[in-house]
Image (cartoon, rainbow, N blue to C red; front, side, top):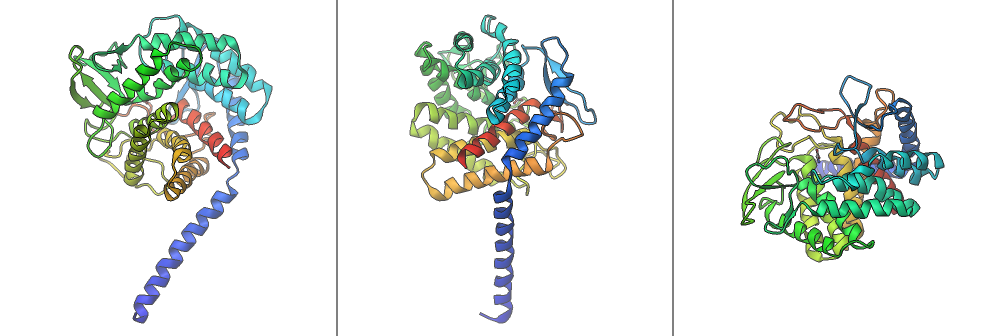
Amino acid sequence: MNTRLSSFYILIFTLLFSANAAYSQKSNSFNIKKQFDYCAVQASKTLAVIPDNQTFPRSIPTGSSEWKFVDYKDWTSGFWPGQLWYLYEATGEKKWEKEADKFSRFLTPLSVNKASDHDLGFQILNSFGNGYRLTKNKAYKEIILKTADTLATLFNPKVGTIQSWPHNKYGGHNTIIDNMMNLELLFWASKNGGNKKLYDIAVKHAETTMNNHFRPDFTSYHVLIYDYETGKKIKGITAQGFSDDSMWARGQAWAIYGFTMVYRETKDPKFLAFANQLARVYLDKLTTEDLIPYWDFNAPDIPNAPRDASAAAIVSSALIELSSFTKDKKLKSEYVSKAEKMLISLSENYQSHDINPAFLLHSTGHKPAGSEIDCSINYADYYYLEGLLRLQKLK
Ligand code: GLY
């Protein structure tokens, strides 16, 4: 080897070694408890400004420091009580349990109303589901079981999936990738005294989605339209992504999280293999150095496109769970180190502090509609806290 060539190799080795050493050092010094303390401070600020009218903080527009509040019908209504339950879990402080119970109970009407869309899992499992897991309160269990039956009324056996948005027919039966998340409510009910058919519905939905909702490279469509009567796939389109054929970051995040959860509940290896493929394409296409994705991986204005911290939070939490099912040592360690790096990145560069009372900045809700762009959103905060809790348990 000539001298110039060997100096080149030495330089590359040194750069790689120092980058790795810097990351390991960061990882070792990442103080999860400090992040919980930060979240508790922010949540206390939010509690101080919530009006006394049974509403929930949803998002804070860029440039504002004030929450926009929504009622129990909003799809995000379960995330605030969910955060309060996670704070109770993280700190053991009774005050969080009291607040979590109060805000969860505001969602009770969802267990007796007719289903208006698929979001019941987000709403009821994040609130009462976490509450039941931590307290075993029987009243919560009844509410969850009733709501699972309500969600199942949206199942169309001719298609094999739940209709996500009954109010928005697109000329057929629609199912959105986000709907994978709400299957957890059906699994939960089937093993906690509910109807066993709920399990079959959840599995059928997951199988139908696995077969139809993805392009050959394992990137997800946002919305799939099926023929209501024959059940045949008509087309894949987008509602919240850049285009019908783009990879909307949060859609892929829901898919990774959703199929990982379906594997946890079924132990069917085809779902694990699929979750691994979904995670692979996400990680391979992730080009940002800080691992926080652009809101859509095909956004035309990258690198100036807004980020979506919520997608990073969802994926970090999902990867930690996926790593626990992964036997391949190299892959397992990749999942854990990338999930941890995402959480460190969110903690170091995306926290709100004095800007507003949310935990995180820079999420994007619905870019094509011009709503909630580059702002704070409650589901980013929820999955951030969940990811931190999962990381803490792993360590
Ligand atoms: N489930 C709606 C969203 O992810 O924006």
